[in-house]
Image (cartoon, rainbow, N blue to C red; front, top):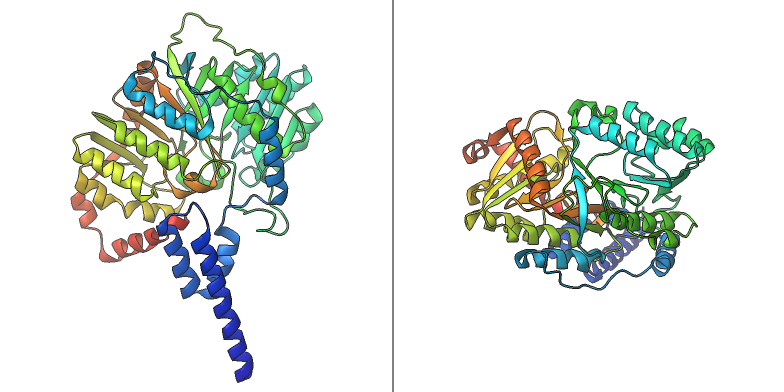
Length: 479
């Protein structure tokens, strides 16, 4: 390369860096830490940095899906305007108002809830419900494996479809690729199950959409009366793709009642985004009530549907307000902890103001990068008085939050940037002493299988380990 050619190359590279940097600075809804992280990468490793930003720096669904999203929003029926309900304690109304502002759902009572014993029990109950379905079965899973549990649900769906139940299945195209490429996928189609893949990866990313924007939701709706919400995918707890971390320990609640209609709305919005089938008429059907009148139906619940097409950092806003609302006890379980500054400060502040704060992380994580970033926050949490535990009985995958014995949150969202900004997630905000007690008891079971992490242990970590954790944490805004 001649000197003139080299000078031209450097000039073009500088111009590209400058234009990319301007784009980083002008993108809306971006926190300063994220901008700084991208600018550092772009200027330290120009070619790699600019290519990485092109592929992963902006949340973009692609032209076709963006157009379909606009059409879907127009077809979906409007939801009720917010009205204060005096049956909810005034102290908790701000929580439900914030959730309403995010996804437009009101808190509804008249629900019953049950917590199956473990992941296998969830699948057994789900199969029973599918076998008893009379009208429709709607399912969304991020990961669906062609293993024992995955196969049991496949067989139940095939049987339901063959007896005339309308079954619709939507799976993430990346997370469930092993099912899609297995013999089960065509067998489901042959049996009459309607199938769709969420967020398929186009041939020319990022023009066809950012490849790591995923549908991370786990939704089941049966006959607009039964619904499930939690962290569990459709798979064996041994989770063979990542068996080294098994068993995967999840929590999934089963509900009967009006809350099913809100998950139905989320399902319909996801389905209509990828399938040219209008389900708006289904959403106008009467809201069901629990069949078993013997159970407690005084469970208030509200669905929180989030994602890149909802306002930025909605998940972070919700969790931060929940943390600030705790007065006595706050208990969180999450497999991934890469928070933004406001959430991390909220946890520390809760401990400083006298709230008993406990968090359980998995001792071994399937993501070594996220594991390192998570542990970089241990010292400041422990210094504030937060009690940290690491679960040793497998990969604790349950995403739960309870406080003061009355409020709980359960769903698919992790406390990390992917759930905040990239993934489509579904969580449920619950006001019920009985349900919160059930979740709290399960959290105590997790605690019994965990080891406490002390500040002395963290301070005793080798210099190289602390250096690695803190270095990885710098990339936290990008993880």
